[in-house]
Length: 192
Image (cartoon, rainbow, N blue to C red; front, side, top):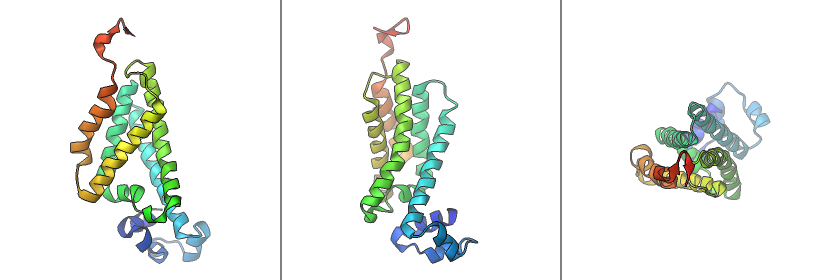
């Protein structure tokens, strides 16, 4: 998987060669094709692996937070920091397979759904804790994924905005601060 990730990240989907991946591993060409009968299946397996790893790292970091609003902030920060530090990884997950058409879109949607579920769960908790206003958390989680995706794709193609330095503070304001329940509307811990 690591060899395939490296080759896809360096060359892109279409220019990556299965022979190059084989050369970077101790697996035979027959062994590689036994497990992954096509380059597309291997690419999608790499995407799955990277998506699960990203969500797992976010889950590990947010588990240290007690309040849902803090968990959401850590999730946002972690996603932008991890993908912002690994440009090739971000490119692989977000744009490398666009020319594959529907199959790539379906796989990308599947991977994004894992992150959206994590956000939705914590938005639900934040609403229950009265940290944020009541909101359709499923739609809000899609909004989070879309905002992060757009910022990262723009950064990949143009070099700006910097995901952590420029985008993170603004996304915190838009996605978190704008939804917080004002403290002056709370009386004895209850919303008035």
